[in-house]
Amino acid sequence: MAHRDFRRKTSEVKVGGITIGGDAPIRLQSMTNTSTLDTEASVAQCVAIANAGADIVRLTAQGVAQAQNMGEICRRLREIGVDIPLVADIHFNPAAAFEAATRVEKVRINPGNFVDPGRTFKKLSYTDEEYAEELKKISDKLVPFLKVCRENGTAIRLGVNHGSLSDRIMSRYGDTPAGMVESAMEFLRVCRNEGFNDVVISIKASNVVVMTQTVRLLVEAMDAEDMHYPLHLGVTEAGDAEDGRVKSAVGIGSLLADGIGDTIRVSLSEAPENEIPVARKLVEHINRIASDEIERSEAPKIPDGITRPVPVAAGVDFDVAVGLPDGYELVESHRANAISDIRRQFAERYDTGNYKPTVIKISYPADYDADRVTVAASVDFGSLLLDGFGDGIWIEAPGVSAEKLHSLEMSILQATRRRISKTEYIACPGCGRTLFDLPSVLQTIKAGTSHLKGLKIGVMGCIVNGPGEMADADYGYVGAASGCVSLYKGKECMVKNIPADEALPRLIELIKENGDWVDE
Image 1: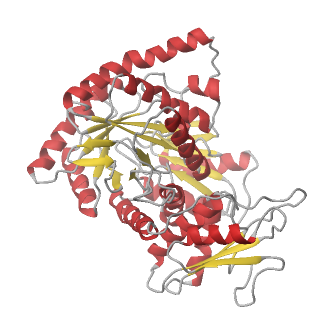
Image 2: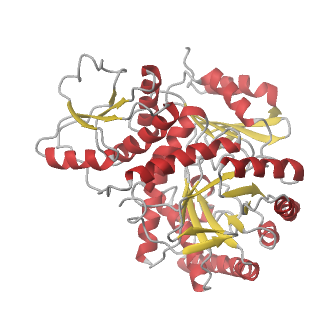
Image 3: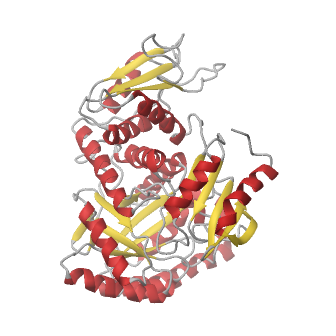
């Protein structure tokens, strides 16, 4: 499916003065990282995000006081002529959700912790009757909230995150895409039964492969139950710089290219207004390729007995002036919609009987700068690699340095989990709950650990985004209190509440103690 005319049809949801879904354009979002109790700072950051081109801005409301102050922030913004809709982000605190619903245009709740208690990673056992009672608890708590939202014209977002599934869901479905989907569907069924349709859904993970698989599974589940709610897309804890942009563009872009998605956020561990230009370039690229319908097709099957090679990258594994590695063939495209062009070529040339390792080459115009190539190549190659096409990538872009292109190729291969070549950082973008200067701390941690190929390190601003949200990480650095950090190995807290200036050396020591350290 291509983007606009061929996009998955969804219902419309009004959020303040804008529409999400239906025939509306893709909406761009970001989130403040100021304290929601700091009215001046929050207003200033909302203005900066709006001026960057966002359609919606989200603020954390971890408590009733923050939810109440969102009303004041909204009032101040409207006074100065800024009418961007505000979304309250709720974790663990239904009381804050009820309060926010009377003050802002939309409230995001997490099915993993709106009714169920906070995740403790305990295995729970239920009979079918007991499980039915647990589901009734969802209705008992959600229906009154929907009533308040209906009375105030407030939309909601059901935001499922991979790392914050409840112990109940985890115990029955495991840490799986199926569990994430069911977590959303439980709440959606209540919304539908109540005739409450002002609902947007998001279902996110820091692992791009898990994120895209889960969103597709959610779409199938909703279609099977005749649900057509709009979708918000994002890759959680994507990090910063090139890696953050590539992971976001691969995950979000590959879904948009298939006609899935109505509103997006590129989550970066940077100033929130930096997210919007990336999101805009992403949508511009999708719109550029939308004139040519993207036909989904199956990648060539790998015959039994053949081991698929680790994907190669141009300029890294082979010299483009010399030619392809021995035994590889080339499929290339200069077209605007390279995704469709490459898929068609594979369909014409390959089947299970004549599979050969294949390098995909896509060429971009000379006027594409590095930022534009980063987004376009991540979408194009990401869509193909996630679906199993190709055994190597070659990006041609005359306006970008060879060094940048080589780095970009390796980042795309890592984001799609086709080849791991460096440390992976699972870093939240920061919000009003963050307990340290996340961008600078992330850079410090990178400087000390970036040579640890294949290791996954989570950097989280607070315990809400702690061991659950960094579910994929081998080690974690988590804000515990003002000036204090806790360190994790997997989901287990190993070092609790140490001074922040001791945290990096102690993290390195923890990695060494567990045999995961290598010298540079």
